[in-house]
Image (cartoon, rainbow, N blue to C red; front, top):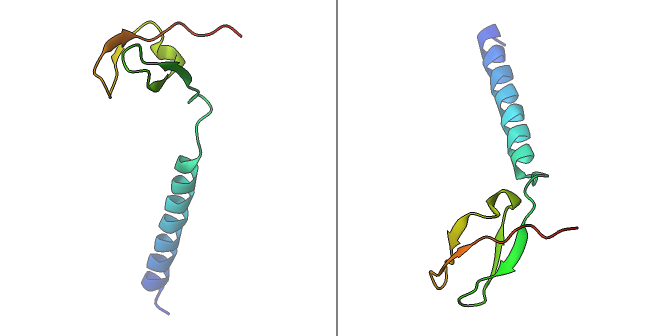
Amino acid sequence: MDNSLLLILLAVAALLAVGGYLFVRSRRPAQEDLYCNFKCPGCGRKLRYRPRQAGNSGMCPRCNKAFTFPALPRS
């Protein structure tokens, strides 16, 4: 077998291995993606938000009512 062909096959195998690793790693949920829930004051739909959004304004995707994300519940 030619050395250049062997080198190309090894490079392709390495790229596939790295790509597979990155794909599997990206599918795992991150630890910091914790959500809080509350009900829309307009339509009552259950909405979720990240803790860093508390106190910021938002809008319901169903009824388009503007609201402020509630403060975090105390543990």
